[in-house]
Image (cartoon, rainbow, N blue to C red; front, side):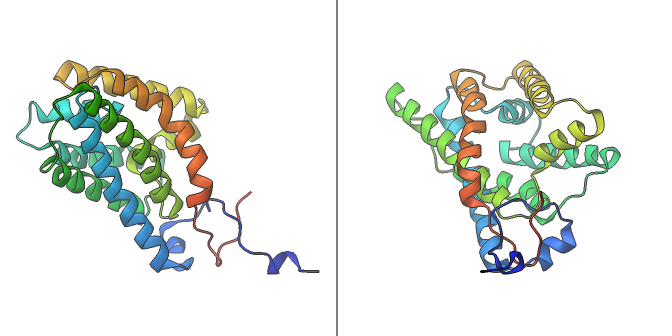
Length: 224
């Protein structure tokens, strides 16, 4: 009978710092998955924007900022990511490699995709582009989180506020997303059915896909 130590590593997210993330093993697989997830995330951001039926909550803010700053939407993604990381300091959150990569790769890949994607002429094509963007965004999120290199800046802000205040993650997330949607809308960001679809669908999508995307870490005990 196999001992507990001989059992294969569990597909669970490990709570480890940046040094342990690099020492935990399977770097080739994890770095490839992290990169693929972040690039795909930026592409899906562009798909949802080009569908022109309403952006994801944070992208309402990014688009609104781009209307008033001499920056592209992708550059606004990077700017907001870095500003959010500053809020991690009083929350005592520890960024990982994936956190830093997220801050830059998503914005750069979004700009690249926006440069080649155009808004479709027909409503049906725009709806298909929106739905595909939301579905693939769920996959992208599961891939980069499952690589076990730490949360993105916005996810870390949400979990950090939850940990420091005791307010539920659902309430913190709702408050943050409503706030950025209102601010982004006032700045000129696009709000619509896509905003609602994303808000309702992304949680269940990630919950369904994440267990399949988590890379087990042989050198790290499963966190329970």
